[in-house]
Image 1: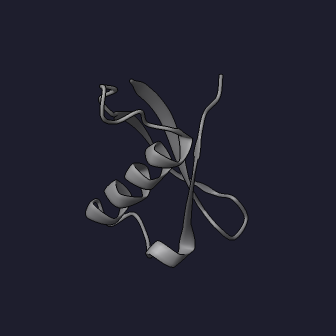
Image 2: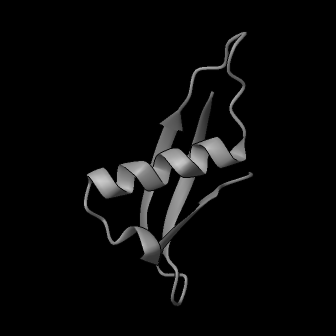
Image 3: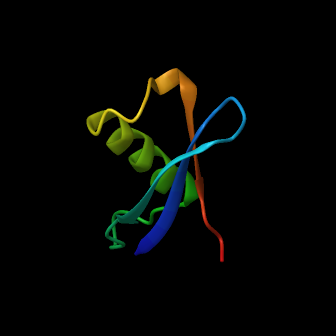
Length: 62
């Protein structure tokens, strides 16, 4: 299952980066919105997009 997730700076809601997250949906794991947002925040730390306490993520619902 793929979702587009935007990562923002908490102050001013400035868009920092957009990720397309692909999480597998199987018998054991059914990803929800929070799973996609958590993965985007994890990737933003790997990519050094900003400090963890300064970023937030939001799944695009359209």
